[in-house]
Image: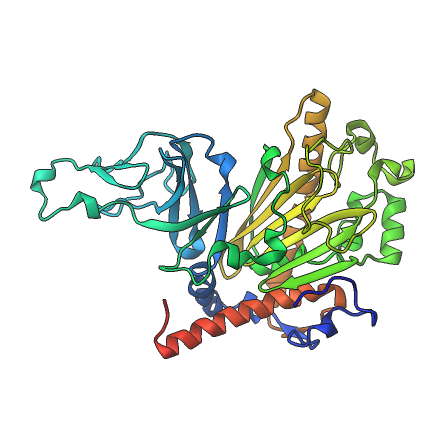
Length: 426
């Protein structure tokens, strides 16, 4: 399902007949019953990104990840053998959450030699093995060798940590990602260790927020107040269309051509951008990444100038790589049919000077403002979709990735329901 150059007829969508061109329903974003199916059919079966290896810098480093949509909490830990492992965050004695600090619903991180339950003091090694039971002699037929932490399938690709909650994943992580994603191997993700992060609770279905970053049709209108008047007027009149879309399996890509911020006319820039040499497109001064040749998966359309590649990894993870030598990630963690937790992380080569530090902070603050505008708008969208006053909606050619996202969701639900009917569900 890959399309590299734009079709000569000027349409993307019509060259994917399986997607159709009819108005689409957003019932999958407003139905509590559909959301319950997503828990089982998608989030307990797909590979999910939960972080990066830099969050586990040494042996004994750990962090927890709350995955409310799957009704579980996970422990990610780097073992004594340097292997990254994942376990359900539950003590085998009475079911207490094993790792947490002051508030059990909040995520935690740190370094330790073993995990000790706060309730009755059972202890587990970094490999999940049960190592100590308080008053062990009073238990009946307790075998510590078979009573360790419950493991979760875990794998690492290019420093990104993925888990799969299925008893047995249908695909390896590499097969699940496919060539469009794995062709990014060699990009210096590991050199960009300065991280700026933010998190927001959004009153909208997780797919609606993903849709917002799968098209740029909205940008000249929604974000017009965040750009200089001259730029906003020109953009609103001309609109915006990305030069390249690509679909591969359940994943999607949109690429854009680029503009060099400092080459814009002074009246097209904000004063703060001139002062900090940074803004929406990131710091103006590109770092030395120490890479002679970028991976073949980057800028597949050969845009010149190139702006960014936004890789949408099914189901809820985005890697957005900028030509300026930095990248960001978005994650959308459902909490109900009409709410989710949105997480944004910006990654840079570590700052060497105060000016570089300020430039990175400017980029982070700018992105936070843009994301909050999207989130606020989508809460209004959610409210009116739930009215069901309108049930089907027209999508234009630039919204092909939105159309694909909802089709993949429906396909995974249908496959799961078919397996239930046949009694073959894993």
